[in-house]
Image (tube, rainbow, N blue to C red):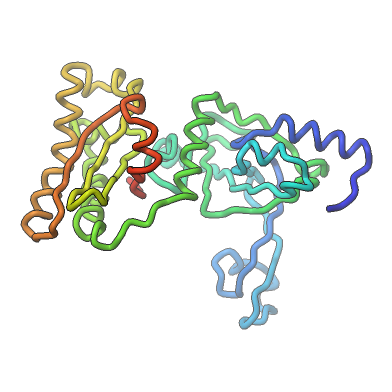
Length: 295
């Protein structure tokens, strides 16, 4: 790694000690590796000069220049000789409607909305489809500036869990997809567009949808909801437990009925729970989150 002057080393150590996963850096330039046909290179002036049979690296500018650190905090703070790089993903300034949909990453494994304005970004949304590597020593460069993202502890925890799910997504077997999960994703998208119904309200209050299989011919679906959202949602002001169950039944019964009629060989079961009702070992070893993208 490059040698740093004493004052640079001290500045870098101070930054590493303060920086946490989810914090934001201002750094306008980033590198793209691709061919002339690559979407991100189509408007690059030198694209015509590229050899179409070779990959090419070019420098691009990110509108707004805001990047969120997605590296885990423990690795951020490790010495550069142990963990020399950070991984960053862009913060995009999206329309308010898209920002609302991306709240807490509930609608997608690709986008996570930050709760308030960051710099000049009015509706910041983290997009992890792009990941950029930054050398830690670049943190002391004049063109790299840490910014306050305004994340409280609860948001940081949800962001950390969301990132973990994104990069450790479980690949379900084809027979499980065919028996239930493809139809489950379609049903979730359909019901999420009906927020005034118990099913739509259930999805609006969800933390994650978990799936377990392997214990015989059974597929178990668990809707994990956040209690703070349930108690404040107008649909659940009365008979919350009954309506939560009704919402889950509305989503799951058509899928179970169709699976049975097609003789898939699987039986579907489902339930609703809050995070404190789900044993940690169950989440760690039995259940896997389903990858869903709701409108």
